[in-house]
Length: 75
Image (cartoon, rainbow, N blue to C red; front, side, top):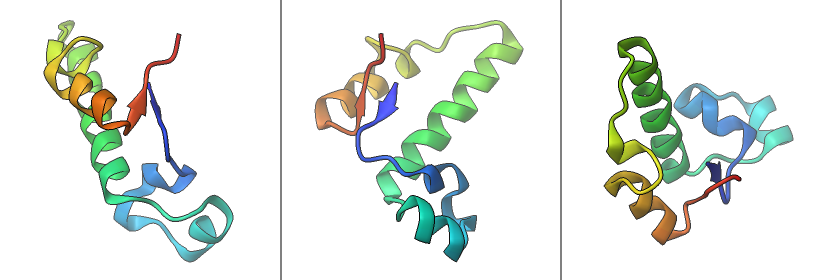
């Protein structure tokens, strides 16, 4: 997936600094939340060897962000 209005600084969230914001653009709270939610849950699934459907295409959380235009699906 890709954040439609993402910034490089989204990965840093609230710990980002002035330089990142200056060079990469400001983060949006919705992007930071989505990125952190996906990262934590995908990593948890990878370690557990499982798939939590809501965080993948077709799942409720994923589809909600897709419908809202927050993310797009990469092919």
